[in-house]
Image (cartoon, rainbow, N blue to C red; front, side, top):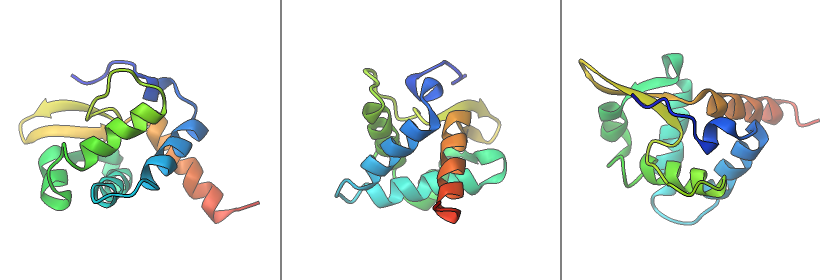
Length: 119
């Protein structure tokens, strides 16, 4: 099971948003699929998707979404970088189910609220 407490779990939503924005502003081919996978997970029912679905839609997991997760965790100060840093996970009948950590959901929810109400 992937439910251990990490720096992502304990970081304030505004710090997570800043880390996501910093990573998203990094030039490179890996960024776009990684941020698109993040948004797809956020918009998915219960913020959950099968790892195989993410790979099918956004390319090799470790090269794109996994890379994005590691970079966000690094921006937050993690010393052990993990391709699953932004998600909790468990292995089920259909494969590995990834669910965005509640701290990431809160951060993205705050980001969306700020973009709708810039005051």
